[in-house]
Length: 478
Image 1 (cartoon, rainbow, N blue to C red):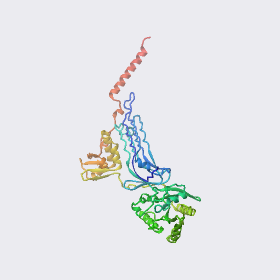
Image 2: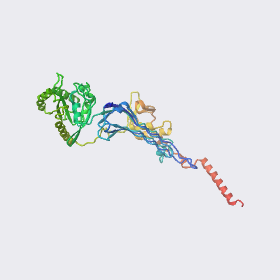
Image 3: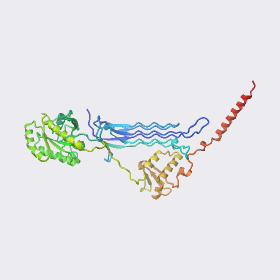
Image 4: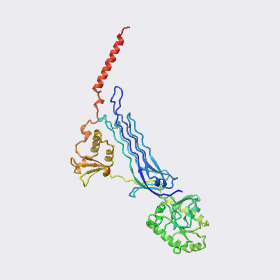
């Protein structure tokens, strides 16, 4: 039996980038031919893609942890590592992506629309890519950057043109079963419908979708009953249709009070005030139901509602209702402005954003936060002095050292780069120019300009032997 799941928490992790390679090209008579370390491969992304054949988030409910593959490390001979494979996760049409705090990250509507939930880490540069006129033979490479990881919340909001709302057992499932080919579970007890049912209706040249929302009861907008779980499914509809039971056996209920209660719950939920409303008086095949429908119809029309008397069981009044809905939906579609199917929330940085911040914490530590400094920290092999000097140069050029001075940092003060749970802490030693800039020729190797003396001596001796053998061949006796 298929289970409907419309809200899940998903833990996603992109692939980490592969490490760069520090390698030197070697061949006969040329033992130091220059750096040839390749770059590491990029880590795979985790991407959510709308697939209209998917109708539930059940797979992610059972398997909430998803991870893309890592990039491969670089190798000598200028061989770059293979990129990690992207992980594509299909989601239903109408899926909203939120962070743990409830902020909307993306709203996916339409077949094939996508959103990158976690971006793969960059591959580290090999020493061949780090070589320059001043740094001819880098003895280090950059490490790969870990991929993004975190928790996101997926919420499904059914994409339907018409939403049927009403009390449990008012006849919503019966109505959708006769208007479309949908086959929902139908019974005469409350909460028969435990999931939203979706059907497709054709009325003339108009094709539209219709959904019944599991029964609403007083207090649904505050979580009572099933209403709060499924009220989100009416947000995307163009028309709201109230299904009122005119043959209810409960003495304390009547169509007008049912309508007032449902409208009160929709108002408390919010965001649906502008949707056109139709009222359907169902079960007129029952004699008492027909009489009650005729009694309350004038009051409903006086409130401005379009009222239809139908019987889902006897198939009465369905054609008029179907074509009236089609007319309203066509008008709503024509009036709706064209927009991008996918809505992605973008939060741009300020124009004067330097890319990092320096703050003094209560324990006297100066903490540096920013995308670039934190990424550079993760790329650095702290067992390699030359790599540490390269990091110092990058931080100095970015202006971190100047900001530390402005913040009042002095020699020997503790400086932390990164978040509290994963920071690199060191004692600050201010310099006018950092490591490699101050040394000027860091990373250069004079062996690239002239052979080593031992190598030259071997080559000279081999040349003398070759010359002696040539003279012997020219003057040897017959």
